[in-house]
Image (cartoon, rainbow, N blue to C red; front, side, top):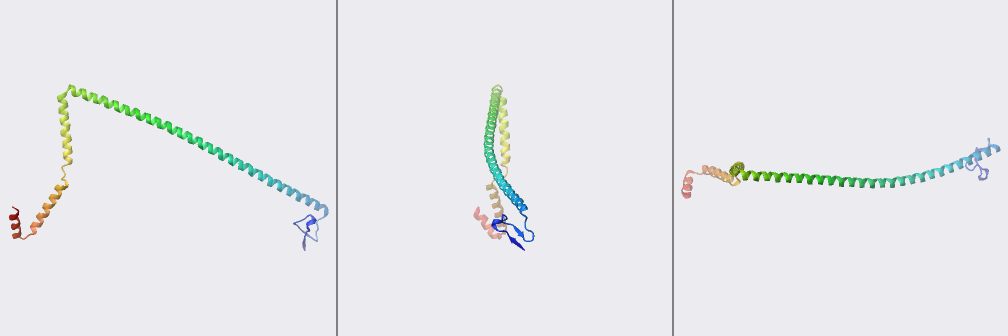
Length: 177
């Protein structure tokens, strides 16, 4: 049967059998080995705590450097967008200037042509007005709402009059004349 060692025996948490007690010279070795294990465990715990502390410092450093990098990237994007916007605005101004210049030149050519050939200019203007009038007249060839409503009323009255007895038809015609 096993018995627990007494606190002063040097084996606080072990069980020793009566039949096989630990010899005195082995006891010292076991105590020394246990002490070495405790020392190693305590050093290992201290090492782990130091490594955790170092890891926390590295994470904080990475966080601050990533924030700095993000801020720099934002500034670079804003600067690039500003430059691109300036280039687009400049290109739009140049295109507008070219269009205005071309319109001015075309206007001057038309004025010169009309001054040199007034009769031809009047004929061309009359032809253009005629064509525009024909095109707009063809879009109005469909009956208006009022015309289509009047046509519907006429058809309805004709249908109703065909249902009237003959003596009422003649009385209505004579009263309407």
